[in-house]
Length: 334
Image (cartoon, rainbow, N blue to C red; front, side, top):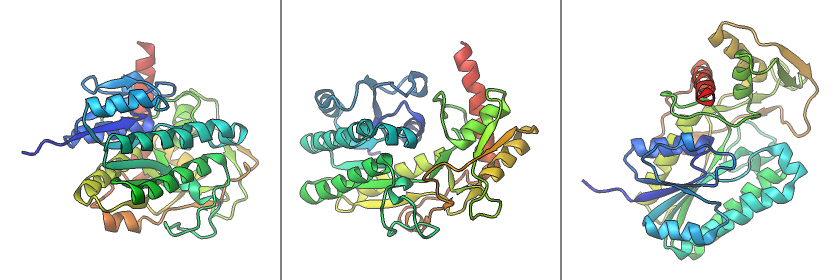
């Protein structure tokens, strides 16, 4: 039996990173997490997984960790993700997402780490003119968040041409849900994800849910998004890692979504269905920069990796998010 090499997960105490850690462990990969816990949570990391509490901007600590644990691949989730904040504070995003990623890539090259998986975003497409969106669609970000991620994709492409490192950039659509065993979930206070907000409202943690815009060019007038279960997303990362290891000369960029969308009202209806309740909905004006519809074309990932989503049912995504929200209340009460 071949022993798998160690993987370093940056931001492994956060929402998506913690699910990647669980999926890596379940698949037999040794994992080390580096996270400054600014938005992540210690309880999200299994007790037997080493945690280096540091910022990835600390290159000395990053490189010490890479060498101490003989790391052979990096999964990079650490960064800032709130679009409106990126507009108000662009320098924060170019520091946390672009400059720090540059340093991390440099450390990988210095320490001879041959594989790099990057948490990118559909925000790199901006306001696409076609739907569904394929990887060949023009990348024209409309905010610093999307631009900061695109710049990292460009760096990875350039570095992979100059050094013995291959990479996979995964462009996420709308990530939702939680681990089916309630080992982790979306834990950030004040999160802006619709399903997170809606289950909080269903449990009485919020008085209502704001619906931003009812005049979009969609069947019910509200924005349509492609929601992907966080565990299916984590599985895509591990399969991408397998592919990078199997063919060191190959790099990949792929969308992560299901290729079908749900409107805001359809999501709220699903939460009402799952809970047997009724969320108060407050209709409001559109937010600047919100496209009518963002739906992925997932044909590339499905033809490239043996990726078969297991949690693509909207009601299941909502049920897992709800179960995590209930567990989170218990954790915080302890």
